Image (cartoon, rainbow, N blue to C red; front, side, top):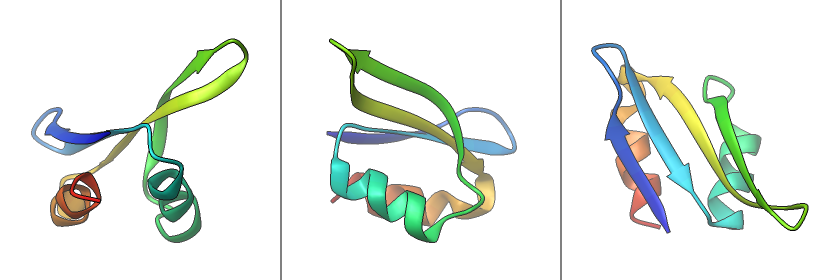
Length: 65
């Protein structure tokens, strides 16, 4: 599951449980900043990133994957 929403006037947030999306963000998007890490039994189950409003379209596209 991956979701994207507007945080404020200048930022979007993307929350993802998909390892594929996590790897894409890590590989291609340097301007996505990690906000939170969600763990269960010591394993990462989800990540939440903050990104500039200019990347809105990318966030929405990643949310559909």
